[in-house]
Length: 469
Image (tube, rainbow, N blue to C red):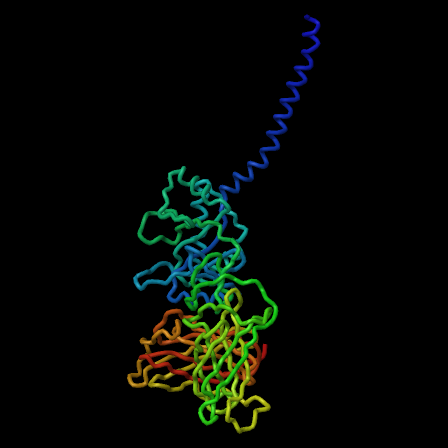
């Protein structure tokens, strides 16, 4: 019996050694997997600067031009621009708000915020310093409201700070504001916002401004239109059939009937998304660029619209602007000759020359056009300043016209390029309307700007010259 026990003892010892060795190996294997997870949970990265500005739309446009940024909308953060992995967001500045607007204030605030976080056991990854510096420099003269950070697990960050006695100023499902200094009603330049990691797929966009995208259903900061789901790409172009009903005695047009067809099935489009209060915007342009109408046919069947409009005999191009449900924004055009036309059909486009005067008067309104950046392949800047002829004062009583402060159509001389755009100021009552259309090529373009005042819609034409790239 003693011999048998003596024989088993080395086996037990060997098993014990193996168990201890396996435990040690397992522990070693677990250390690397847990340590990075813990470190990541306690590490933030820069996400955004949030500024207070006089005109958010102007700040958006400036960011796009100065930084080659992309316009974005993010839930809980509002309108902004994205450069790489960094953002700048904008809220309107109230007249009563002041603060540090000296150059470099955003970088100083970031440094203060990072120092405060590290003093509370939270590390900050500084890998995005180049993007952050570009954003801070571009908006150095603006009033900084707070600095934003993010992490894969923001809940762990907030829990860790609360365990250290930090009580958030404000908390939502998407963000947490931290009191980095003395409490006050308005957050100081070093205030910190920790936001849920927003780098989710952007599945919504503005049909009128496709560079405005979001992961959530928001409203476009430029035109105010609700963002819609980004449709899958489709090959082919939508087609428009046109039927004309002559006016009495065959002189001109009494009615247009338009049928819009799907590029794949060739069937009438079954449904449309309402854009600026209408399912279909139709522009009727004289081939000599002297006649202009912006009208809105009524739906009568799937994909079919009718317009009762007296159009004199002549040669025209009609441009349909619409958004098919599940599709992309469309500008489809057709050339027509209305009944009773006896003239010679134009074989070459009209010759355009830039306007000698940048000031025109219509319906008691003085309209002055200032242009810049008129170069092919770039976004131009067209600013229309409006004043009352009788009083000499700037206008401040513009009325919304089809869901926007104004509309502008731009065409080239041969009517092969057209662009329907809206002002950068989403809700202004005047005195300025600013448009930023993309200029496709060098040459002359005719633009018609429209606005409403006192229930009267005014249309003012201008001709501009665009330089080569």
